[in-house]
Amino acid sequence: MSRLAGKVALVTGASKGIGAAIAARLAAEGAAVAVNYSASKDGAERVVAAITAKGGKAVAVGGNLTDPAQVTSAVADTVKALGPIDILVNNAGVYEFAPLDAITPEHFHKQVDLNVLGLLLVSQEAARHFNPAGGSIVNISSGVSTIAPPNGAVYTATKAAVDAISSVLSKELAPRKIRVNTVNPGMVVTEGVIAAGFHEGEMRQWIETATPLARVGKAEEIAAAVAFFASDDASYVTGETLHVTGGLR
Image (cartoon, rainbow, N blue to C red):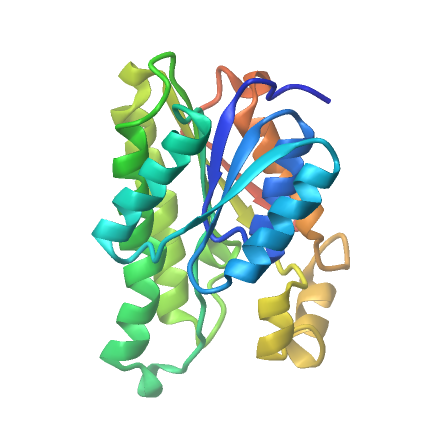
């Protein structure tokens, strides 16, 4: 596969989970990939090593994306190492569930500052360093933006915001030939899901029962959707939201 040969991609939050799978898939399709991380430098370097071991090109780029200065440096490091950006995948995010009575300002800002503000800051800075020929931004939202599960008011709100922002930016950046689309994953068993205890028990059972395909997803299945949006196969597609949820809406 070489749909992305010669392209430069920045994938945020790519040291593990879905982000790591996206970085690997884009590299496998020919892109040079900047693997962004905030805390897990070792994880990012493992992703880079796995890519380079297969003949791909990748670099690890640090940066806490809630900090405008670190966003600027992460984008600058990407461009310095690889060249102008063709593809941005806004994958970095956090989730935390709480019932209405337990919502606090800290709970709110922890998620909004990264999931919404961070995404905007990275998109803003990366767009300034995109290839003049244009390119693709793919935002990773979540199936919760339409499923709206109980105890997820803040997280669901952040992902509904991502959906809306994608629609706005698809129009705003179209004159610059930058397409903006969204991938909304269902449950995928990642390190974070396991750490939260959601990979087994009532939540997983409910999802598998409610999902038409009767299973949870795989990180590679999310990555495949991202690769489509990033490629010229989607050259006439912008402002779209693709639910990769096994049919659960």
